[in-house]
Image 1: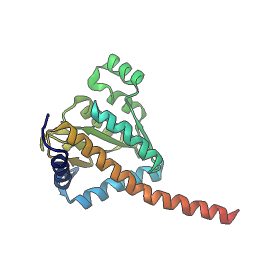
Image 2: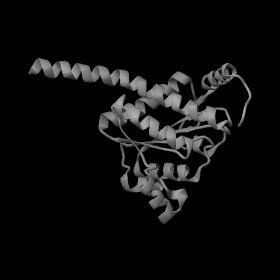
Image 3: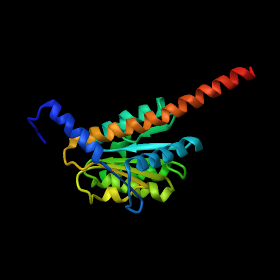
Length: 207
């Protein structure tokens, strides 16, 4: 959506959207911002502690968000994180099984219990993202969803934790998702850095 608002006005719009974003659990129960954030962090920490994988998926701008945050999840938060949209892989699976199964078929082959899928879709209606969530469920992996647009979008009903931004503007929703994911990564990274530092000190003392 095009706009002629000033940058300051758009910054205020973004700030308001983040403050008014909503978390829900697997049963559709609303969670406070703090409670939803804590639940998301607990899922991420559980995956890290058991040595599981975090798969992050999206289309278009959301795929770019996925690529960006997997780097921070790995480098900052100590998570085994990866995307699934490498060109040769996603074009292969799309060509063989149809784009609506571009992620789901691969997840069936590689995901396992103890893993986590983070599914990002501004509209919450992308078929390949919804099918991927179904595959993750079948393997026993946990699911976090990030969506926007309609409050009744189907993706928002599918995760263990669901983060929703009340906007139909792709730019604001995508940046809101990246902002939130960065916040989670940084929160975990603080703890992980402390743990690594303590571990380094302990190993040094033993030596």
